Image 1 (cartoon, rainbow, N blue to C red):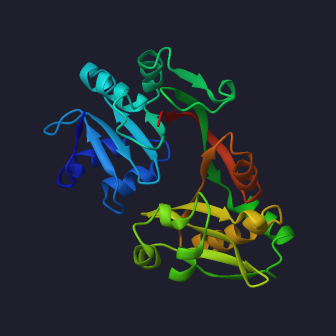
Image 2: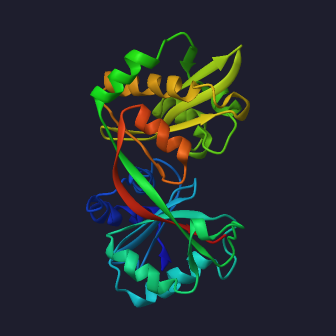
Length: 276
């Protein structure tokens, strides 16, 4: 397991094209849209890759049979050398990785609902991630009945980028405010002249735009997220982007909101939280 130089990221492009689950976060790193890291089994002819986005999402893909890589990856995932100070959320492709990982993490893997104390040390927590498929008719039907258009929504500028607080905000997905404003897009809702909610492009690659959404805690439960997301979805439709939504199954709020806005669950995959 070696850290690839950025000049070698191109070696992961073709293998990544074989990945059929949502992988825009990995593409954004490999295509150098954001500053992440890429590991591989070797530098010269890599067949196994591990891509980490700066937000902490990661993708393991490629050959599952390299025992040396797998052994090194096990140590990395369990953070045995304390090299990481935060956990990572990992997807793996193809699904044959799941059997390999169950063996690799034997004795160290636990389902999320079996981890009541949220123990993260030397434990791999198994969650579920949902990839959704957008249905424009369902969205438009919902919008006609529920989106009044009375809220004050503006494009997310550099000042809003800096002031938006929360755990899923644009600054965790873009290198800086200029990068976001020039290459991304977002819309922010104000309530009584206070910033309340922001929906933004976590990633834009090709004709796909993946949505991110955050509502400041004091304004939650008022339906602001659906208004703000609607502005971003309208932008997608007007500019020929396919809106993309993915979340943990355990994130009930995001799961429900996605379905309100016309997204239907399409793929369910294991989602591993690696030890910090």
